[in-house]
Length: 157
Image (cartoon, rainbow, N blue to C red; front, side, top):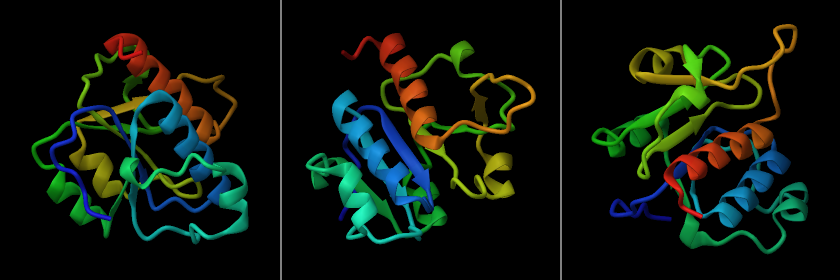
């Protein structure tokens, strides 16, 4: 699928997702809340995987789904756009951040996050505050939490 560079609106980007059910749940969340979903390949599963299809149901709309061949392709396309990295290593809470309508909110791979080079080049690195003894939230839950805050701030719905 080609990327619509003219699209203005919130975008959720997933770096090399590896759990089909999570990606499908995120796709449903994006469809219901009006965000575009961007997948940075390689993807760790097939979109024909029965686990993916069971969760995504009829919410997969190719007009709202974009693929990037690699992280370098993604960064090249996004060079003039703001990328916000959601990470447990973030320097501030997502609730203290002013989101814009055209932001791309990047989430790391479920099993490994994003490469260190992305932590170094992406200026806006945010976290969801959690109980200190816990490691991380499910990525699908994290996307829903952050996307809801974006919509609240921008008053899109």
